[in-house]
Each structure stands twice: as C-alpha cells, then as structure tokens.
Length: 321
Image (tube, rainbow, N blue to C red; front, side, top):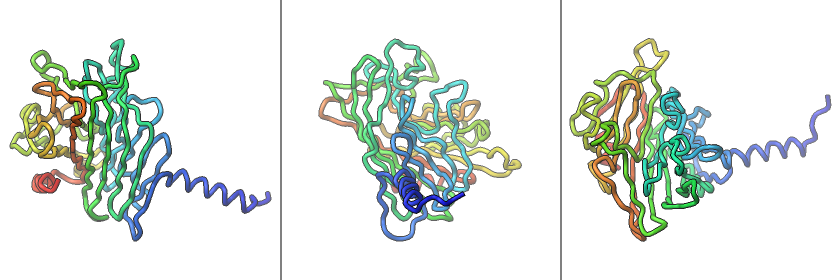
C-alpha cells in the first residue's frame, strides 16, 4: 500500500491541531497544564502528559453547561453524571432553581409546561499559563416559551499550584444581569420541604466516596451532615474512600464562598449519605432580586484534592480568595 501524499498527511495534522487548540492562546515557557477545545462541545483541561483534570461541556443536547468528569490530581474521577435518582445532576454545575418562577434546575425533566435552559453561544477565550487555564464565555438564560430573563458573563480559572501538589482549585465567576425590569431568583420553600432551598453552584460526588457523614465539615464548626446542611459558613468540604483503593486512599472536594458575595456567609446545602452533595444556597432563606442595570456577581472556589481534608488549607484558600 502506497503512503499518503505529504500534503494529505500535513492537512490531517493541521486539522487536528486546529481542533485541539481552537480559540486557545498559550503563554510562552514551560507549562504543566494544557487545554483542548472541541468547538461547540467541550473544553478539557489536562495535565501536560494528557491526564484529564476537568471537562467543561457546553454543547449538544443539554439544558445547562457543567464540569464532568472532575478528577483529582492523581487521576481519580470523583464526580457523578446523570444518576438514576436525579438524571439532571452532572458533576459540578451552576444553576438557580427558579428565575421568575421558571424552573431552570431540572429544566425539561421537571415536567412543567414552561422550563428553562442555559445556552452558551460560544466560548469567548481560553488562555493557558504555566500552571493555570482560564476560560470565559457568555450564557443566555432562555425559557421554553421564548423569554430571556437573564444574561450572564461567566469565567473560570483552574490553578494547579505545582505538578506535585495534591490539590487544585477552580475559581468560578458569574455576573448575572436582568434582561427585563428585574429577575427574581428563588428556591423550594424550606418551610414546606426541609430539603429545599438549593440553587447556585453545587457538586455531586460519585457514590463510592459517600456514606462518611463525619467527614462532612464546615468552616463554622459543623461536623456531620445534618449539622452542615443549612448552616452558614465560608467553606464546606468532604472526603471519602476512593473506590478500588483497598480501603486506604481518600479523595475529596470543597466549595469556598467569596466574602464579597451578595449573600455571605452563605448557607450550604449538604449531604454525605446516599446523595453526596455540597452546594451554596444563597436563596435558602429568601429570594433575591436582580434589578435592571444592577448586575449581581457571585464568586466561588471549587477545590479538588487527593487525601483527607486539610481544614487549614481550606481556610488559607478562603483567605486568599
């Protein structure tokens, strides 16, 4: 069999390069992270040797963008994706329950005649530094009956302090602006359902690291699941035993709330039994309004780590945020 002509080989290689690095800019010098952008689908953030850390999906048949899989620096995936009990749960996500009464959380799975979805027209920019990757995008909040109550500017920056660090963190910024006179964000009433109040940024872990309620902690001193749930704090964290680790290897995650957020210290929605989940819940104790011309900015830091939770590190990452 004859070899392909050089121009065909070059064209294939060139095309692969365009797919991998589309809209990606790189700083000069040695890097420990890389970004792969499949345009219209997802952005993968990997170590320099190609091991996946996080994949951000924004295209296809989904009703909100999400980060999944989410892997620790050692390569262990700790995120869950569309579990049978809540198929709209996908790793790490940022979705409000109700915007002007429309359900954006479950979206088309809610069974409600009008539901919401977050649409990402395109990724604006991707920049790769020595030990960080930053991504910026726009999000259009649309209802199934043609309304658009919110516009959003979103960005996230993943930082891995060093190739030896057993953790990395990702800073997510969401600037929400009302498209009409106002946008009211609310949640399920906790007076009616004690599991209500959720909405904002949240992460649901895989089942194999669940069922360690004494490992669910919060900055303000709570210990077990029922104490952390609904409690206000600067951060909340959880760790569990990794599946296949012969009962000895821990991994975990944390959510940190910025002190200048509209609701801070924020109430956390948290569970470590059955459903392993931590989320910020700014609307837990009451709805809030985004007025026209007065955007609201929410900043959160997600931490993913190998090993057990280090409260001193979580506090440090909060103080530096």
